[in-house]
Amino acid sequence: MKIWSVANQKGGVGKTTTAVSLAGLCVLHGAKVLLIDMDPHGSLTSYFGYDPESIQPSLYDIFQAEKMDRDFTRSLIRPTTLDNLKILPASTAIATLDKQLGAKSGMGLAIVNALQPVEDDYDHIFIDCPPMLGVLMVNALAACDHLVIPVQTEFLAMKGLDRMLNTLNMIERAKSIHINFTIVPTMFDKRTRASLESLQFMRENYSENLWSGVIPVDTRFRESSKEGKPISHYRVSTRGARAYSSLLDTLLQGKDINKQVVSL
Image (tube, rainbow, N blue to C red; front, side, top):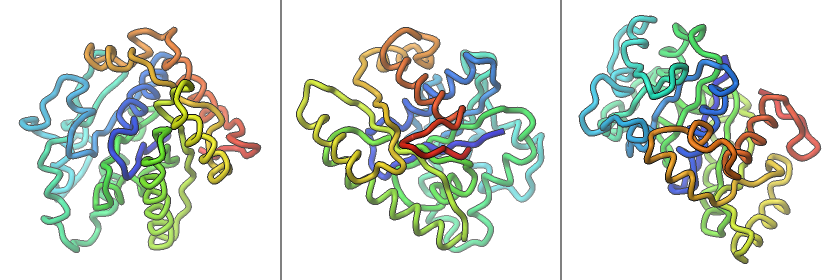
């Protein structure tokens, strides 16, 4: 089982689209996949028709549980429109966790502990992260084997990328761990100067961990979300789906990002 977290400390860069698209493609290839919504906004939860305002139980219960076993974790997981794709939904209550938990020990590994009993149930787990540092982000980074950082190809997004990389370095030092990561340029529009220049900036400054491809602007992403389906199960031939397929192939096969092998 591989656990991938999808994170950036800026909203609106394509985190949920990336998590759903990669998960859907894995399912298309015959894998069993779990999506985890760790964003208080609940975009991933809403994507599959659940209401983060009212859903119970949810991810929130993991941080309240005194004991976690297979039955407990399985009780939190919901079906989606695809047989081999499940979701552990978020409720908006997770926005209060940092205030509730304070300095309570052991909370940084709550997700790790919850997933261990079901590790044989899935081939891949994708975590959609919140856009801020806190107990949820710490849990997502502690749990993952590989971090995917979607970055919109516009200059304001560079600040979010810098914050994300600073957070990553801080957690690595604090936890004495190393987290492999891949930066993924998203919402690329070759017709605009902003996209072209920001992509060039990433290539000049982050080449070591930058995926060589781009995720283009594609209206089919919006249409597929309206249908509650990954783009791979809505219009697999679209340019957006093809781009994510190329990204997944790069990650799964351990191909070079930029003359360097990705370790998963």
